[in-house]
Length: 300
Figure 1 (tube, rainbow, N blue to C red):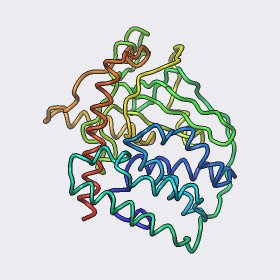
Figure 2: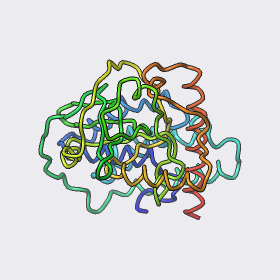
Figure 3: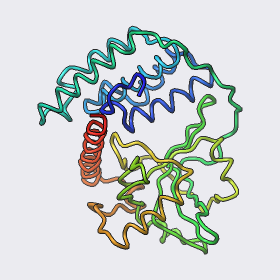
Figure 4: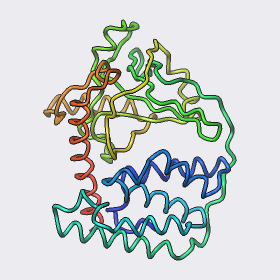
């Protein structure tokens, strides 16, 4: 597992940060510039429950690319304090394992990586979709699956969209009302590797998107300022696997009952209510804790 050490540290959040770190590194940003950008994006100091994941992700990226800043080391050392370990306080044994995993990781990255990653040449491409676009991807010979673009990062050094998938499958273009009334897609298993479970989000870079441009169409747009946050600490899925995951979920539901706690519609997404946001927060926290415990068990 390299510098990650035990699987209790290697999870969706740290993995997402590492992917983003590499993208920015290949764009030519310095390790300090990347750290500053990720700090601004993830706001670790105001996130007690995921502070550890954010800083281990940043530290791992710097270690892989050649130099862990002293500033990063200080923040990582802070991660062993109880105020940043609220997810683990209820179970003393797991808390002890968590602290040991962080301590082992800190010791590991004190030794410089023998062969730091080299930057790869990146071809710049314009971003395709904007925030609020309603798009659909062709997932078999005739059917399209509807999605909403909730983020469009058009920074010249990092072109990426984040989308939210719905369960609205169509052959003929749906009406605006049908789209608003459709539910956000929920995955009970999330692929053979179980890498994603919950209300489904996916991300793609412009390079990734170009490969699927012929299979994707824009079917509308809506003004989107704020939107409902579907997962705290739960990583986004893989855009390339949407069709596979959708049909896998359909097959699952033929013989199983979903563990989805409640429906979330596209209208809910566009008009966020605090009560529903709080329910989603508690649900995603439960899933996140289960996944961390699963990683820990698989590593022992």
